[in-house]
Image 1 (tube, rainbow, N blue to C red):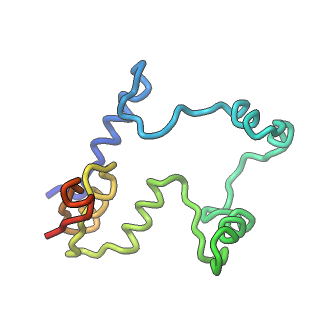
Image 2: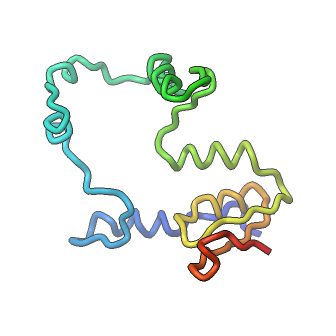
Image 3: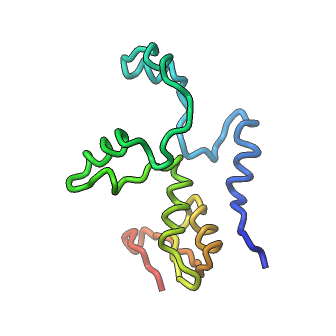
Length: 141
């Protein structure tokens, strides 16, 4: 029995995504340089030169969590968890919600990270698709 289901799609993409001229599997956008990003914001790079590169709070700084919470009425900074990208957020969510023996339905097609995570946490996973003739409504047996 495999103790850990590897995320084969991510391994494949990581191997090839920077070796091709045209990447048709990319779901994101072409990355901007810091200069391009600051230019779009009409901001100066000077303040960045003063930023110390060190470890920060692993759950996000108080200031950042406070600003995120302020976007949601009734939310507090203590209810906000900042993660290092969506993959970590998916992991934390699955870790907190899925118990061995749970049944998990996952819409296909998708990134499939949660499929492997659910299996790794002991769930029985089934996929389902949305179809136009059903009004794009989920139909899970």
